[in-house]
Image (cartoon, rainbow, N blue to C red; front, side, top):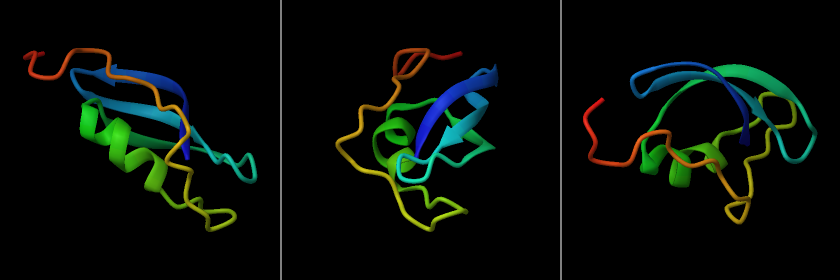
Length: 71
């Protein structure tokens, strides 16, 4: 999966539109804006349509705020 667009964000919690790299299926879900989520969690999400996870080599979106910054 990858983040297609962040729809809303409050501090580090956000709602985003996720997109599957394999079948193109999109859905809305929640996330947390830290480095771990963007580097390790997003690409491992399983697509509810085709059942595949993402590819680790896919370039993920970065955080809005630097790690360690209190928001």
